Every structure is written in C-alpha cells, then in structure tokens.
Length: 84
Image (cartoon, rainbow, N blue to C red):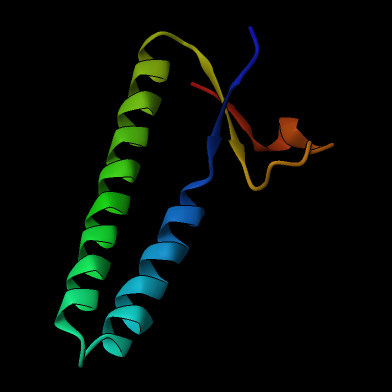
C-alpha cells in the first residue's frame, strides 16, 4: 500500500508564525485587511486540525503516511515516511 502524502506540519507552523507575527502587525491601520488575515489564520489552524484527524484515522487503520516537504519526488522519502 502506497503511503498517503501529507504536508509536513512545519509548513502550517511557518505560515502561522508569519501571519501572526508580521502580517497582523502590518495590517494595524486597516481593520478589514486585519480581519481577513485573522480569518486566514483560523482557516490554517482548522486545516492543521483536520490533517491531524486524517493522521489519526491512518494510525487506527495502519495506513502509512509520507510527510512531504515539496511537490518534487524525494529520493530519501523512506527516511521521512512514518508507518502508523
């Protein structure tokens, strides 16, 4: 069975840190833009939570997961794979 490709959690964490630390601050004088940025942060948090639900389902069914860092094939992907 082929592993399920999923983005590495670091992708979410980096985006969230950028948005929370820099983008929200930069939107201080524009409430509408700040609200849209906050909605984006909420959406990313929901996406990460949903991915964790998928990971839990895989763990329950022993379905392998492969965390991806990019769209390019990884020649050492087995080092990044996790069989749950």
